[in-house]
Length: 161
Image (cartoon, rainbow, N blue to C red):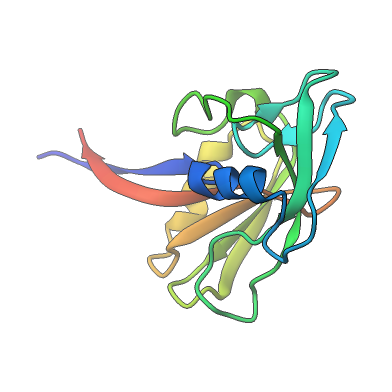
């Protein structure tokens, strides 16, 4: 008898959203984006890795995906100033393993129904624990120190084993 395991997909900021920000020079609030050279280490929400020194970046306000709810918010994020290849896959970003992160779990209404802080050593277990609640439809990963959005996580079809 096959068993199933929970699998999930990690999502960077969608390319069409980034294309719009790059084309207009405006963020979700219609504020101008800021172009800066990277110091190195800035977390890039386009490709889910840290910037290297001197890379050309945009800093702008982003509203992570949520249904209309009191928990919607806008925060600052970094992305490449020019289109990049995006993340290497749909799993947890390899470059961010070992980094403390806050995980917020949301239901279909966009309300927070759970959260956890993990140290980055086994992020899959932390995400799986949140998705064990069947009401959870979306998880956001956030930076512990600044609270800014890092990426979204959704369920994928269970894999049969």
